[in-house]
Image (cartoon, rainbow over all chains, first blue to last red; front, side, top):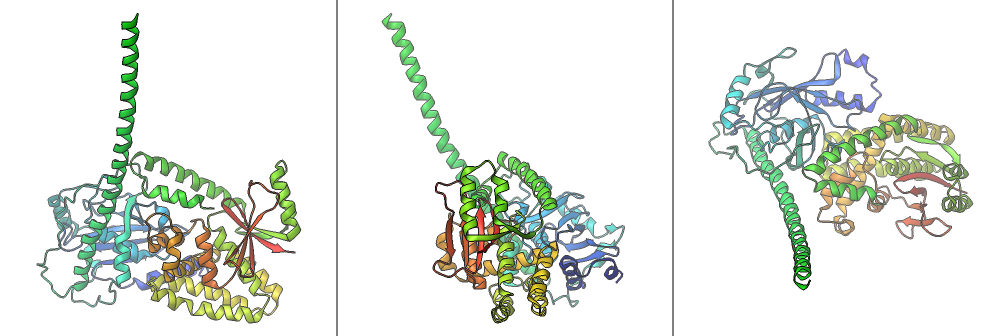
Amino acid sequence: MSLENKYNLKSPGVKRLMREAFELASPTEEFHACPLDDNLFEWHFTVRGPPSTEFDGGCYHGRILLPSQYPMQPPNIILLTPNGRFEVNKKICLSISGHHPESWQPSWSIRTALLALIAFMPTPAAGTIGSLDYTPEERQHLAKKSKTWECQICGRIADKLAWAGSDGSGHKLTEEETSLIKQIALKAEEDANKSEARPTTSNEQPSEDLEDGNIEIRQRITITAAHSSVSTSLPNTDALLTASINRSNKDQLWTAVIWIIISIIILLVIRRIFLL
Amino acid sequence: MGDKGENAGGCTMNNNGNQNQDELILAQQRQIEKEISESVPLVGDLEPVTSLDKEYSTDNVYLEKVKDLASKYKHIRRTRPDGNCFFRAFSYANIERLLESQNEFNEFYQVAESSKAILVDLGFPQFTVEDFYDTYMEVLKRLRDIDNKEDAKRELHTIFNEQGYSDYMVVYLRLLTSGQLQKDQDFYSCFIEGDRTITDFCHQEVEPMYKESDHIHIMAACAAINAGVRVVYMDRGTGKNCTEHDIPEGRTPTVHLLYRPGHYDILYPR
């Protein structure tokens, strides 16, 4: 690879990216990612829409921009294929649900990022910046269309992934990974929007009628996805609930105080008028 | 201490308008961090303790304390205040001291060698732990193979001032600390405020870079690499002397750190 002459191989960050490129070199059924020929710090990836969701059958392509300080700082993901869940051409980054991007951990990797992206797709958009709240029908339509989507650099993206039955089984999710992915949230860089916890609108119940019984890993991802949608929305609701309860308690107190003051003033006014 | 801890605690519950405010603060913080990184070396050269006088030329409370400090410590080595200062200072000072004694260094090396397996058993992702571990061991090996003590120390200094290597050393110590916390959850969980679990705490406050360290981080870091540290506190509190804390209590400290609110530097006893 020509990359080897171009970068300082002694730099641990470069070594790390080389390692990741090597690890991810062969595509799996779920995702594929590799660095551009001329830039180790920009990767292109393709992920398969999680089965039994409205993204089922879709292939989504995007870019990963790695900061020069990677892995100390998080990668940015930019989706290019219209998908109805994330805006295209907008940087999104990973964090632990409910936390700032600063909670990125150097022990996460590009693989973690892509698995988290797949798992995060079926979660409610909840108004987060960079998120889209398309209807399931629109998403299904986009999923169908995505199969013919082409990247100017990589070509037809549907060809990038391994197919069921082909030997992509070397990348099984470990238990730790499954639980790790559940904690990760993705959002666009600026985060000024309200994050209302809405009830799940999407129909992502993991239905049992998977045509292929042997795609165990895909099933597992579905379950993860369903889990993560629950686990990401629940704490949110909790936090919002407690916050609003606190607020309403405080509000009640203030209303009471204001009413007391008003009635005292009225009493004084009445006394003034009648005693004179 | 703990200032950063409260900060982070506050962030978890933020919603709506506050978030916007937070983002602004973060942006400003990043700007400040950038300015700092351009002006302060990751780990500085040895300076006499009395050089602290310059920072406090008009502050009598501090000047008294510097005098007290100078009576016990000869030199100070400043570190970059980037939130990693404790881990960087501790790792540096510990290895620097170990270079004095070949036996102790070898012992440390052996413990370090077996640390990866422990972390992987605890559930850390093997692929990335390996990445940090390999660099960590590479550094230790490089230092071990230098015969001359002074040359080794110079090499240590160079390595710790190379951003890539230096940060990798920090990450690995953070991982070891996190591992220690999770291994002894029962003990450490009583030091955590709120209803966070140890694992949450590690994911939010220990493993991410640039997160500042609290007492609990120091306790776990000491246990993880089997070292004792004396933290000398210098703040505007009453009294003419700096307060000292040995962690773990009762153990003869091998590393001495100066703590001023929000920051750690390395101290060298007389």
